[in-house]
Image (cartoon, rainbow, N blue to C red; front, side, top):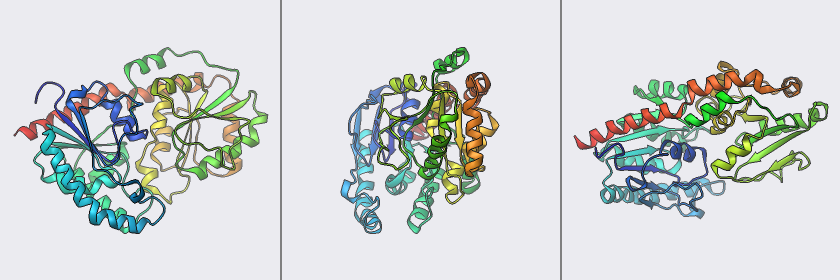
Length: 395
């Protein structure tokens, strides 16, 4: 291996500057990785470089936008991709490996990147590390999602080293594949932990609830918004919800511009500064167990962003969800597992009426951050995994 930063190829569906949570995790893990030793293979192109992640080269096995199977003609488009695009993408990936000759491949098998990755990497003779952030069947089981899930497990089992986004997922994958892994996810840098340890001041002119990113469970979010609309005039301070992210929700029936504000997408430093002006973060998951693969084996990156900004977190979700379990273990804010309007109203009224929530929840926010989200520690573990993969490539 050439030095502390081997020649690394990231292989996944999304681009180096993708706005999603997984992209944020990879960029944070690769914070100090020199661009000249970093290469990228993806199915989707970079729209721009607003996150500033530079790479030596980026090859795209492009999925045509009109062919991507979103809502319309899903079955037909998926068949076309499997029949024609997947074989071509697999050849494209093999040529990429021959062209770049990486010492290590970091694989995040997500979406339609899974079939070509599973065809090529187990037989490529290159050490590779796999990270699982979401299961392929997280939002429902179909014949196609079950097939993608089997390919995900094949990649996980074939990898030289591996990790997943939360402990329940690591344990589940070990039961399924017999292979152990570590936990790796977004985390707090040393300066974030230092900020939390010194934080004492709390703004008390308003109650500002932050929501960062895309709304995945909109039914639960709508319930939350309607409940706040009913109780906000009873609260001791004015209440607002502050939205941060690419998506606009102004057209939703629950959106009220008189007390909800959209800030759009912000660079990481600006987002951190704006979150620190808020009083709370809100992190929901499904209240029902109709999508248990998402609820139990995913962890929203926004939760980590709130901790880094020194925000107590209001969590809402099924009691068996990974988020609710974490929120119960670390008392970082009210953890609500009921969708009954009376219960939700009572819990939110009690929490939002209290003075100085940081004095109540701050010590647990810091403990949770140190125990579960120490980025320096997680990054060192990942880099150690890359060293093992590089040794496997050279053997």
